[in-house]
Every structure is written in C-alpha cells, then in structure tokens.
Length: 634
Image (tube, rainbow, N blue to C red; front, side):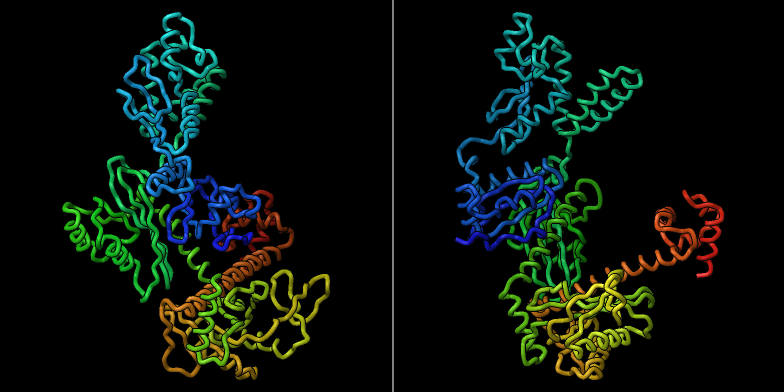
C-alpha cells in the first residue's frame, strides 16, 4: 500500500479559513463530511502517513478518491452546513449519524411556570421554543454554558425545581452557580420570565442591542467605581460576544433563493451554486466550465442560468448573480413559466446577500485555482500539451524547455523584463531571471535587447553568472566575493522562446535569434486579447482550441512572466525611491521610513513645503529645507 494518497492536495491549495469538507469515492458518493476551524490544519491530519492513522480513518481515506471543501465565514456556518450535508448525503463513515435518532436541539420550555433550557431530540414538547438542530451534542451544551453566563435562566430538572420551591432551599445547580431560575432563590418568577424572554430573543436573532446595553452598564459601573458590577457585566458581554455570530450564509428566515458565485479567466470558469431555502443553505453545487469561445461575464451568467434551470422543477423566488445578464428580463419570464410565479434575477449589492456572494465567489476562486493546478500537475495533460505545441508550431521535437519573456514599464519609464522557465511543463523558479533596461525606444526594442543579452550566454558554456545580491540582476563582471553571489548558468538552451505580444514582438525576437546565430530555437508569441499564437513571417496567427492543453500551458507561462516582471518592477521602484531620499545629507533609513509613512509617496513629499515637512517627528528646520531643496531639483 502506498504511503501517500494519490489525490492528496498540495498544502498551499487548502485554505486556512473555516469550512466544511467532503471525501468522495471514485463514483462521486460522499463518504465523509466534517467541519474545521482551519481547513488546512484539519485536512493535513488525514494525509499523514497511513501507518499512523486510526484503522477506521485509514479505511476511509483509502476508499476515497477525492476531497473537496467549501469555505464559510464563521464556525457557526460550518456547524450548520455540516449538518445539512450529513442529512443530505448520509455519508457511510459518519457513523455517529447512521442511527435513526434525530439531531439534538436546544429547547426552552416556555410552557412551564419557570422555563428551562435543555438539550433534547424530542420535537413535541408542549409550548417549547427550539433552536438548532446541531450535528453534535457537545456543541449544544457548549452554547448553553456560554449563554447562561449572560442570561442566567433555569437549567435544573423539574424534580429539582419542585423540591427547591417546596423546601425553600436552592436547587443544587443553583448552589454552584449553574442555575439562575426561581429555584436558586435569587430571582422571582416574573424576573426570571423576563430573563427567559431576553434569552429567546437573543437566540432567535442575535440581537446586538444586548451587547450595546451591557457595554453601557459596564462603563457606567466602572465610572461609579463599582468594579465588581463592572466585572459581572464584562463577563456577560464576553459570553454574548462568544455566541453572537450573524451567519453570512443565512438570509431572512422566509427567503428562498439561489446564489451563483463565479470566478473565471480566459479559458475556464468555476461556479459555486448556493441553494438557500428557508433562509438556510441547503446545498452547494460546484461546476467547472471550459470556455470554447471568448464570452463576457454577462454571457457566462446567462449560460450558467440556462444550464441550471433548463430541466429544473425547483425554481426559487430570487436568483442572485455577480453580473446581470443582458437579457435578464427575458430570462425572468422564462423562469416564471417554469415556476408559475414571479422570479427575480438580481445582483447582491449590500447586506447579508453581498456577504454571501463574497463567500460563494471565494469558493469559486479556490475551485478554479485547484482546477488549474491539477491540470498542471497532471503528467498526461502536460505530455499532451507539449505534443500539441510541437505539432501546432511545426517543431521537430517537443519543447521540453520553454522560456517566456515579458516587458513591463511605467508610462515608458522604469523598463524591466522578466524571463520565466518551464521544464517538462513545470516551472523552474530557480532559473527565473529579471533584467533592467536602461535605454529603449519601444517594447520591440526592449524585447530585442533582452533576448540578445540572454542568448549571449549560450555561447559561453564555461561561464557562471555573477549576480548583484541587492537587485538579483546579472552584472557584467565580478565585483568581489563579498558583494556578489554566483549561480550556475542555464542547464541547456530552450527549444522554444515565448514572448508576450503579437506579430511585432515576435518579429523582434526572431531578429534577435538571427543576429545571435541561434535560428535553431523556435519562437512564438501569445496575444492576450484573443489568445492568438503568432509565428515569425506569418500573416495569420495559429488558433489553438480553447480547451487545448497547449494553449493552457502557454497562457500560464505568459501570466507567470507578467507576474514576475511586475514584482521586479515594484522592487526596483521601491529601491529607487529610497535612493533618492538617501541622497539627502542627514536623512537615514529610519527617517525615510517615517517620511514615507507620513506623506504616503515621494510625489506628495515633493509637493510639501518645508514647514509641512518639519512637522514630521525627527525632522528639524534645516533638514526639512534640505529635503525640499533636493527633491525640487530632481
């Protein structure tokens, strides 16, 4: 038996947020549902070496073929969603719920003379008010223990209550501070009833008026130097805040809605469909879409809704989407015919609906990342991508090493370039390079310069690159072992050079290859607008299918090169700003940091007068004048 599960996600893929996770077998059946305050921490326990796992846990993870998760805003949401899914899927490894018992509820016996709060599975107690259900009994007890600190209502049994009221001696829970009913001999029946009403009102809606009232009373007691009372109010406030948690996954109690969170890029989209009935999330449906054509977000929403409700019988009153389709009115009419009543398609702008939309979108973004990462890590998909590239570009062999170049600048200034390297379809970050370009006329000239500099190293096989440790750039000569670091030159020349751009950039790259005498290397460019692949000398681009693994690989290379270039540019710009200010006599690193924090940027500092600069802590009149004069001349 292999000690590592083949479907184990990468640690970085798993979020650290609270959420609910599901293990599925090869047929898609849900085997186990669980919740976690930290999904990454919890799931890592299941993917420990198999020999260290409990027998039942080992049997579950080896039976499973995949694991998926849904992020939620709070632990209360994960508790409720876990319950929903256990009831819906009846997972075989959730043995605690396989019996015929119903789930536990918190109940307040409002029909009693002195109502008490209990944990029960009986839904037929006369006059009782129920809260829940909860998938775990301990969760109900934990909530009650917190609540009675803020609302000390009765918790003792009916027998204890009757005996205490007959004898006039407090019940045992009352003696140890666990019961606050009339049987504790601390409140009257009327006072206790008012406390029960507050308890029920809080549990029904998490009314924040209680926290505001307690905070005011705590501050008033503290001002009156009644510190014991202030401490009691503080403890009650802490107890309420520990329980108070408006669920972003719960809408109005009478609201039925479907909500679609969508994350997309040029080639794919991930959809999270939250099904809300009675104000609670009853299910989450996930969908990944491969785009055949380039469509707008509004068109994508249109297609998603048509797919979701084409054969559906359960159409809700309201459908919440991230972007309103262009034919929203027609879609509403189409859905009305299926539902028999009015249907509204709307965008969630504020409140709980907007919170829920953000949650769904986060889940969709993570699903899209997982989808793309799994495609990249799939050996078969990578092999297919390289083979497709070889055929599409007319290469004699598969491009096992691909180098991608991107040019980045700020309004024509601070021009930098990046080079990222993929070998066998995977990134080689240790061989990424960045380049500073001192003088250039345009992007094509910048591309030519960078490629000539890179290709020159192919003709010096015994050379090691000398790297400036402050900028991580290649320098022309060794300036001393104390100030430089060395790293090995490239292992071998690339089979394919990819440039970010269209026909002009490709022609510049081809010219650099000819001038360097390396015409054996294939070059192509990817134009972002239509994801076209350009080859030198061709009047028309190569169009790869939108679902092509080859196009997906080139897109990822382009995006990685762009990210790396932007990162280098920001780093260089930060160094430039520090250098400008460091030239001022008497201005050290600490004062530079204070100045930038105060003014926000060098531009704002340059516009400031000496008197304004002098207001910054540690800056005197003479230094303020020097700073102003120096920046005015730069």
